[in-house]
Image (tube, rainbow, N blue to C red; front, side, top):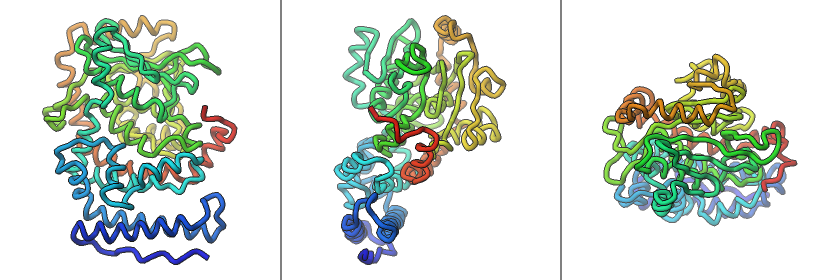
Length: 447
């Protein structure tokens, strides 16, 4: 027989006192959960008890954060005088307010499990980050932190200046004339994105934006090594579904990606001394061209929605198989309707509509479609065309478009919702069922 849960605090008051009261409750709840068998071994009664314990603790976190999210954030950042990236912030919060979010050790222990066997401790990270982003001052400051150059960027600048090329393993940057080419590389997995690729991809984007000799950036996929597309370039297949099924994609990965690399392409790199805003920008940015060869699936389709120009091969396609995966496709819900209209966007996100690049619907996203064999020449032609008169007004025009389409607070509010909802999606039983039904995930090895 499962033990009765301890009573949860139902009110909020002074910050320090609430930290102590709520922490005691969360730690007591965690102790009760730990006495139950591991998730796969629970009987029906034990499974129900576990869910009740977790939900009561999550409800208490929401109450606590509705009163104290800004206070927690201000303490973690010393009244917003220091910048902490989201993937570190969630673990700093675990030290400041015990039980509010899982510790790094707790998350690492669960990372050894299949996704279906996890208790979803990282949902608490989503609850926390959602509350931070929903707080205007704290949320803007966190977004600012994520637009700063990655900690690994500075050490590679000299190499780029010296060689015109930096190979980061999962990504590469090459300087070609007026353009910095960023190549995403995960060729064994159709250039899919996962925890092993994200830092390299973000550093490559930073380097491309910071390089003083180039005027614009090109995003392209590497040549893949096996399967139907062996020997061909593909832009990418989105999130690595095999890694997702095997529990190798941490929840915070989604937020690190979209608040970081994708938003940097869209808004540019910030500097610590000036907050990015809609009017002055206060960012360093360049125009971006995406090259769609083979396909742009899921997260790679999402990249297209922040590009200034999309060049596609005639036989390529675009898709957002979010329904088959059981997750929210990044900021596609926010951005795709601007390109295709609401009805096509809903069909793409919720009904698996595949968009051929060389179709009326595909051309709403793709600016130009060319024969695949002509792609290298087409890239050079587009680069020359976009830089022929210089790009002096590019940043100004990008800001003018953003202020009309996606002002900073709209972005912040969207990701406040996304952080919460994606956390529950990431640990939903439906996600596992979808991956087994649509991806044959049981038979695939994470490798």
